[in-house]
Length: 450
Image 1 (cartoon, rainbow, N blue to C red):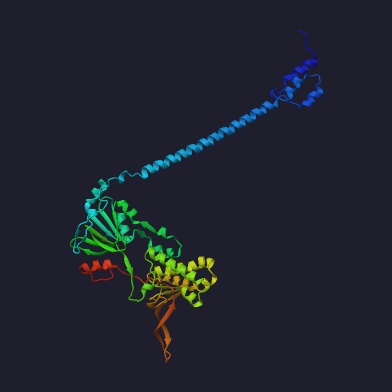
Image 2: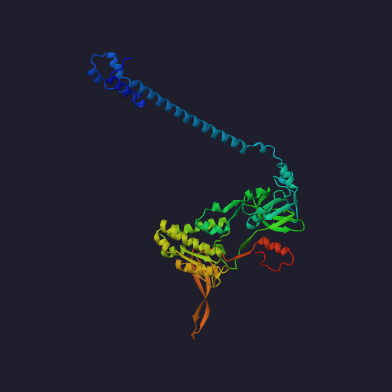
């Protein structure tokens, strides 16, 4: 067999050593003018086919891009449509279960609830049956339970309601307000530090846990022999009407009222025990600043408008004074003329040697030092004599030297012009509690109920 020549063998061995990736590389396309110049003898058809080969690939790329865009667009539109249908269906389902009116048809009501019979010592209507005692089987079952009547809607009443088990009693709560108030924050609500709505909780919402009933009114008297509670309500025309509420067990949690100490003129004072009181205080404070900002207000009148007198050095009075000071420091100085902040004066009239006398001595001293640094005048060993519409008159014991040079304590009368007076000098027994105390035997300690 003839052996190949050496050059051919060298070429064959070289071809065997070429890498596969080099062999599989695509052909390189050159511009059309290159083929035309070097291969002039080639036909026109072959030259054009080589130069236009990338065009189909570009068309396929554009088609794939268009398909991808259409696919994702359809996916987004479908998702949005499905979301709208899901939300709409949820809303309809919620309305179907929430606003169902099937229980409003033919609601049974006892004739005694619509027309209660008269009785008792004063021949008043007796609310033996409530309007909702026969609404369903559960209400009918609850109507046969022992009657528990709770008078009041404050801390004591809420404490009792939280301990009751649903179904143990036929509960009725009687209160002058339809909501319970978080009273420690009333000074803050009076100046706008917190909103009023954050301090209240509807009583009906709390009573619903024990499936109880609510009557908006005041307890005024008690007939123990017949177990009847006399309640005073206010009708839509403003007229007062009274009725009897029967009970098997009675809980009195009416709280207390402000102590007057026999001082005349308290109708010109503000108190801070209810939400209405907080709103009235806030309105008066802001009105005073607005009037003091008018150019027609005289300096004397501006000074009177911006003088705030707090009668009482207890927690309520001290917190109110501090809140008014913070209001002046944070809000008044930014939104009102600077002269208004300069003319502000805050007085605290305290009958004892120190403020906050029910707290530890360290707390009392700290509060006095802080008020002295902030410019709040604390008048101790003083008693309010009378309150007028435009001023407060108080007496204070001061030390003066007599003709012989001896130091003696003399009672001095001081008048402070003011358009804002807060009365917070302690608490007294509620009138209804006093009435019950008079009915009970051996009630010799008159301050027990306060």
